[in-house]
Length: 345
Length: 279
Image (cartoon, rainbow over all chains, first blue to last red):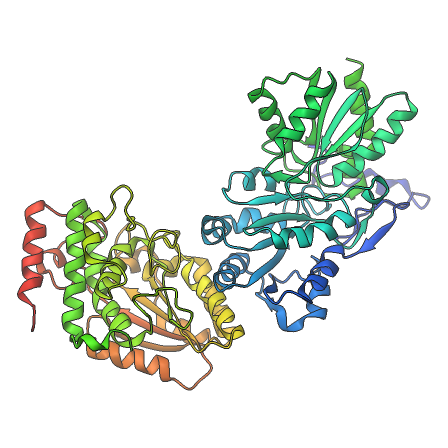
């Protein structure tokens, strides 16, 4: 434990000239101060899609406002259902809607969908391949509120659920492209949502989202970073910094965690004898890292070395998000430092 | 109403549902046969008095949706679906066997007329809420029936759904609770006391009736009242039933949640049920 509840922070003893402490508001964007952003990419994309698709309905468990679904609700009040703070009901009623030919898009936080409503997603939705889209904010470590809100193991849980497609998008553009792609896919989808003012990162690389496809965002001879979600953002920033130090880093973005694009992953790992680093905003247990590791083992692909960047197998602390990302190794600086240390091994 | 052309009385329908269930039980030698015998009258009224369906087209858009939340009661619903001619009678010999369309726990992907996958208890009422909302969205005048058990009253998800149905004023939703007073670990009230049950649903803004679930006349009146009630409330029919109803030597068994029945006893049970034919 870093701290005891019986010891007051020593900060308070420093007197009047003490610095302002770092804080982290609940709805803080994950965007850095210099990043360009777009507001509520999910809510806007879904509202636009529903203009021409009458099957779409939006449902939330008292978190429309905090999952960007309020944008959809404002645009299509007649297509929005408030199900109350009842995640089991949210999934059951979405199953009922889907049975009758509608395409429900349900939103809550990732912790509640995974830990609280798992049985209902599994049996009422996935077992029958029903067309329900489950869009969840606060994936992995994207809030400083502590374990009650940090969905550090959602992918590990959902990877075991048959029929479920899992998407972990990186930025605003990708979310905007993923929404219509998910709508076209027939069957249940779980998407980890970045909400609010979401960074725009991938446009400059000419990247286009395709469901089920991993794509090389940049190439490099020294290290291959395989990443999903916001860790692709961090990987790209780290790759730029590493270049200044003479290290060439490739970044393979894997937004579809399941089904996993093993062919592309294996091909990239075979191409050159590089250090392979999997970076994910998730516990190192049961996520992308272990999925990639197992795929490599099954195919007898042996990279120069295999390392994971991810959250530790523990309940994370509360605090300010930038501090926590640094503490748990998800910040750009820590990603870069880890890769350099592994290259020096 | 469906199947009225056959001109077979409700008591005879109930008797035949019991007989089909016993014949399936005989295939496996054990099962949830006491529940099936207990709920047979409710199913007879559901399928031969209350609900609209087309036997030759089980997914007909205009049908009333009849959900079986209690997957364990599949043997009972198969018996009703056989009697309703949605499933051919000779398939009962395949009950619970490899490649059968009649698995031991009810699943929508296996069986015509099985609307949902039950068995993970506490799912049906919430799915019924979603279907009721969807039917209103489609301007359909079909009803959604959800048959669930007193054991499912233990599940919090049931009450999430109950509150939602009251809140949304789902007047196209009819809940049927089979209160047979027996759960896996013993008598229901002793497992978790859900009484007083009627007032609970009243407090959740439901239109509540409680009847003897083995009294066909009372069931007919209750189903009629539920369908024709003018208020905006969802409707619930609490049915107090007797486990193993109609086969006295099985009724008398103390722990009859999951019955093991000797081969000669199945024959005896069917003989008792057949003796009631045409009464």
